Length: 266
Image 1 (cartoon, rainbow, N blue to C red):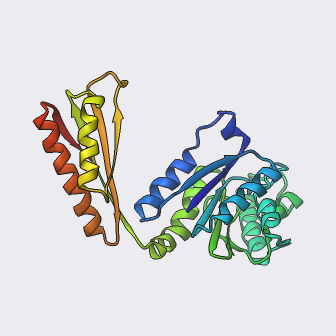
Image 2: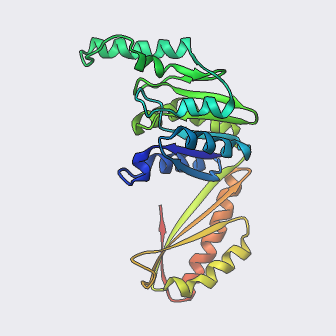
Image 3: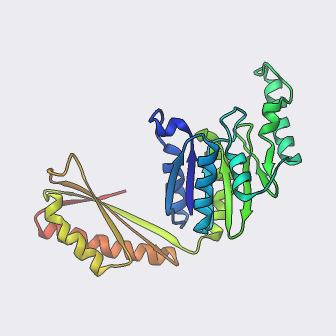
């Protein structure tokens, strides 16, 4: 699957792209493989081109994040519309969701315009064939849309809203569709510089080709502290756990053989 995040604020470094990180972690733990994370500005041609690029690879899912709000630069759904050649239409169920949120905020006295403005109607205007996803934390619904072999999911960029929609609508769906399970282990190795331990990592991956081992020097490459991240996908969780444990145990013994100190993480 692929993640497409939208927003100038991400590209100028104003905010960190924590949404993509959170989604990648959750999807991976559900057995999904994130193959690409792409960020584009609030620009219709860029959004359209990025979506077409994603769809050309026919992933199971494309998740877009951001650009579902009421302002002029919220144009993700317009981008989906143009990328697929499907017109935008006011969606009755999405409109009902927006109206309910407006009524809630009206009752709380937090709206200066407690009625359905064109800006609020925009959040209920979806590409033809799309379904709205109820947003328990905000006004703009998420959107689900099948495009050939790919299911497009559009999520708001506000983190609390994105997470709420994912938890409510997508976690079970992705777990059911995933053909794999995921497991990981962490080791902290001290007393061996990364270049000296690199041959052992290579050997571990030769012995366990179904496992991926990533090393992270702590405090810079010249230090003798390394964090190892060991991960694997498999058809069952038991098999994934077996694979990572076998590689982790071998690396743990190898580090001690070389005079290092080892600590299990997490």
